Length: 582
Ligand code: AMP
Image (cartoon, rainbow, N blue to C red; front, side):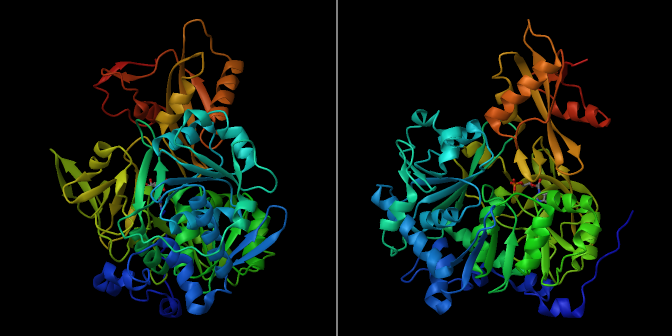
């Protein structure tokens, strides 16, 4: 069915940060974003300074930066002044432990207050911060630590014991492990709290430039190991501008980003953009729970809410009635990212919260939001919106090595014209993989999309085999590698299959070694093995056995063919097929 456009009222438009998107798009230059920031006194640009110190200097130190809601009902408010002081203390702890500018600090923890001081303190000290997802198993964590040659890990005692201790000695770059819990740290680790308490709350921010490395975000590839996308301090220009334009953030807003800080959204829009725009962030330590979430929106009087389709679908499943007892009148703007947002979800938002969800699009490599439905724009449900000011996006097709823009309505690859400040600068140690992303004047995103005649962009699917499950990008290769470490497994192929709530879930096809027979018990055992290695968010939900897997003549497993068969779709070009499962 065609969904009716949701039009915005004159009052909505007038109150938006970007009341006339077309005009701003025409007039904007990245110098305007730079002008939204202060820069370091005496020159240079540092994310932590823009997020904290400049607000304190301007007299906003008492404003709440983070309202933290603990799983157990505890609440803790951290003002801009106290967060700035904690970031300085953390920076001092790093320096006093011999960590040098440019070295790499990894964060592996849930949504605990220490995370924010650690991330910002690292940036303040001129070191690089890398967030890791706490639900990863030991293997993905170790792989990312090796690739990024991590020097410091900030984590909890339980995560350390379960996921790090066993391999720590194998990664010699990792010299310092800081434990955030109260009490003594395990052997070979340093307890962070007493170290912070003893440290000074003053630290001269490192004189970083726009081009200095600030963050490494890992993302999955279809082949090979995970890729470490390098981002620089200059990215804060994108973070400040997109927070204003795409999320409509205004100073003093109560803002809630539900993304986990172990992924790029939880960093760019769960730490940097909101603080740079001087809002009060809600941070909920707990996982999704319908009543809890509705309660937070009501009690905390959330004004701007940034969430994801999986959560929206879970809310929809519970029905409108579940939302009726709650008062959502504080909500002013709601946005969604990470996976396709069904048009039903956009409309449902309007019915239940009085506002539609505004879908927007970006990826780890782009560092910030690129395409969005903004506050003053009419929404076409199902569309990702239009490119933000400063962003040129196109739909392209590749032809004989060349590249051409598609006509409106044609499906092609979503491409962006490089040049915005939060664009990744490299994949760590992988120049060839990085170079492959650029063809002609374009950066190719790996997504298939369509632009309509009025300039709205519509997501079609991935151009590669990557899987999006509950908003997490999963590389099939990483899952296959863990599966074949099991004694019984000869070969494995992993695909994403549609799931009503998670968007996609991971399914694995496994060929067994001689001497092993398929059985339910073996299936359970292999699934258990994968969960232990990879963590529940990445491990396959389902495993099926096959005598053979479909392969090309060059020996590559044809995941695409498995997927087509799974979905009952045409098998496409199978001229290179050598062996087959049947
Ligand atoms: P990540 O790098 O993990 O943030 O994943 C980025 C990928 O998520 C994109 O390349 C898309 O495939 C998908 N994605 C992000 N936002 C959207 C959206 N609004 N609609 C559809 N897919 C999206």
